[in-house]
Length: 443
Image (cartoon, rainbow, N blue to C red):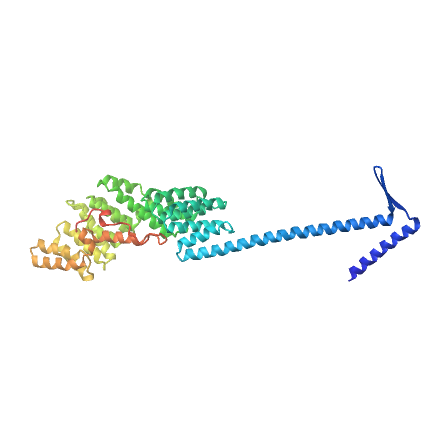
């Protein structure tokens, strides 16, 4: 109200000044354009100017209103399209979650152009197409996703690799992931997916090379990475003896990472291979050194087979070590059975029988009754021998019919259970049969 009053005073003052000027001098305005002249009083000219500026002002205001209305209409239409696109995208995602792949793909595709996140639309449309087996549509949607959004190459590559892995296309997935790795060499999901593909392709050397990056940048735990390293090394050992040549086995062990060579499970696998290839002295040294570092009954079980025949000095040393070990593990049935086998391999039947019977008093384990049955048979007591073998039969697992030893089955089970929990195929065993691991040992 105060501002209006001041404005009115100013207008009145200006008006009074103008009339004062007119009273004092009158005056006129002359406008000459070529041969044409226009003459008018000052007040008339002033009124015309005011009228002109008023018309101009109202014209500008009217134009602004028209254009602002047009922009408002366009904005309203755009928001309307975006809202419709958002609704269709939501319907498509709901259909995707419910497994209605074809409906999801159609809804996501139609709403992609009006969506504020077309990348999401195309990626989920590609997933829906993969679910119904439309490989061509998958490629088309992934290309559209790449064109729709800049800087999403890694996300698109991971989606493509995931779909390829799901469909068993591991070679194609490897190529896709290697391209993604060039763009994001430290991306944890890229590294974890590469490890999965290397496992499926049995590319153990590449997996071992990848482990340092996995350890530094991936979300896998230290235990999972250790299990991957163990799995790769065990697989390399098994592959090295595929030709049944011991030199390949020895060379493979030599070039394995030094840190993994003290892993009990890997030592057990290597020792089994050595024993299967009649390298008992090497196996005995390996097992003895490992048992001195850490007691492990899987290794103790194998130690009873790693006996160099016809050589008394190593035998005496092995027997002495075993009995010394028994002082710290007096309640180990496995160790007593191993000592029995060591003794039996050098003809000490009475000593072997005592240890087998002592083992059975502690615990009934696979192989104990068959060992005792063999002792009775060598003594001519076939009745007791048959009784022992009969008692052994119920203890034998199904794998025993395929000439698999207990320690071998333990290693297979341990490896299977130690695979990373994050792997998509964690329910699968590492080996399909005992023959994939090694040649059977004789008990």
